[in-house]
Length: 195
Ligand code: GAR
Image (cartoon, rainbow, N blue to C red):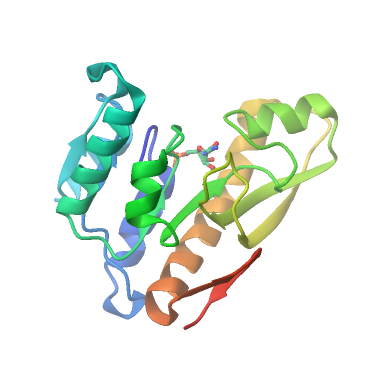
């Protein structure tokens, strides 16, 4: 599921070309039209769908509709690869425990939509990225993996985010593959690959 430029999606698509990777991107579902991520999916011949909040009177109806849309493709795992909307109760009832997300900060520091900007403004010297299992909170789910990135004195939000994204996409690709091959085990706050 995507909302933006799709660099994480592109890395997943590159990885899935290898049958040994264990995962295939069966579909790409977005919450908005006209984004680069949808072009990347289309160029790779992957089915796409858009379910936009603006097309619904009520956020719960959007949540139910996007859950229905995702269900059409029968995914084993739902990967939020730069998906910028909070999923609601209906979606979580349907796919909970098999949704993972990637966030451009070392959670629990700097959750939300501006993880890079917030770390920079706070004056953090080290930030990074987190791959986690999605729960009902904002970036509060059990953590699967993290990687650190040093903040350089002359960084702005764009330069720091670009360096985080390099590390982030390899971490996301690694963990989607591990989960596809080995399963996903969650016990309380502890998440790992395995059955
Ligand atoms: C990624 O850095 C991802 O962590 C972030 O959006 C970017 C998407 O990049 N997601 C969040 O901030 C979620 N809270 P991409 O569209 O190029 O993959």
